[in-house]
Length: 378
Image (cartoon, rainbow, N blue to C red; front, top):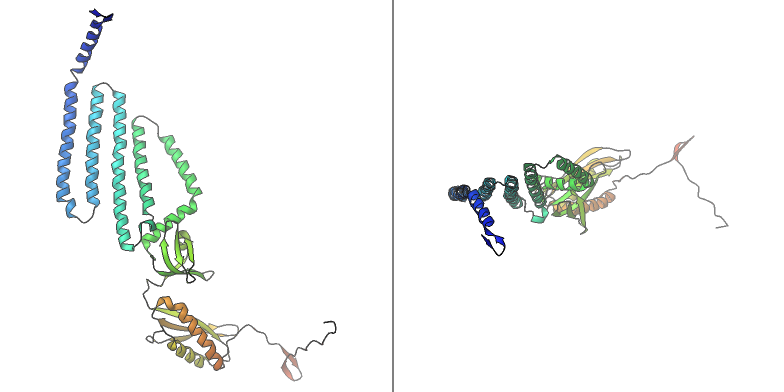
């Protein structure tokens, strides 16, 4: 039948072919959709029971995040399977393969979120234990990097599913990673050192520490005000903020005066000449130490002979002080009083000097240096 120049019999024939093609596929399609919905509903009911019986009874939030992950995976799995089967029934084999790949990649997003939530829970525990703030830890950066790696792995698996060769991509990623690691070697070293500092906890914000370099006998002294991703900030007694890279801290000796407690032992070296009365010098040192505020009388101050030098006897005063933060004040006050007391007791503190003796018929005599005659041209 032809109406308005259009042969409607051809359209009717085409429609009958479509109906004949679809009538054998509608029922399987409906069954697949029903099966997917049933599986999704059953998974939800089971996970509700698990959440009510197990997850809510524990103090940690990790199992709660695990239940959420299983919810998401059940939804993604049921939907991906349904789309894959329906497209296969209707002859879209290539589209079915792509739908499966998309579903695989999609499943890695809730997995990445679960890993992120787990790291966030771990970060909360570390913050509660160390007292560090969110910006003072390296875990936020680690969290983002791990999420990126998980999602990237899902994308690579999906590409492999559709037949894309991922070996060149992996090789390229390796080259890029190597170049980045070489370019940012110091930064990465500082980040890793920052993570180790937070895990090992040799100090925390508010501690008074000294970073000691043994070979050069130099150190950085002050209060820790921030432990960052790349560096640690220390406020020294001059109220200056010293920024020390974390990898530099890991290579130096860390003396934590706060962690040791309030009372510490202080060692102060002194030298006297060989002609000095050593016992008298020891008595003076012990007496002065007990006069200074902050020095503990129990245990008693101790003075020992550490050794001999070219022109001096080396003594060491060992005392206990009640506040570690007062070590420099106590040492300065004791040394100032010792200088005055040694001068009053005629105990010589040696210093570099040379004495020239001349031997003649009378024996050894001090050499006399004649004064220069006056000059008229001056």
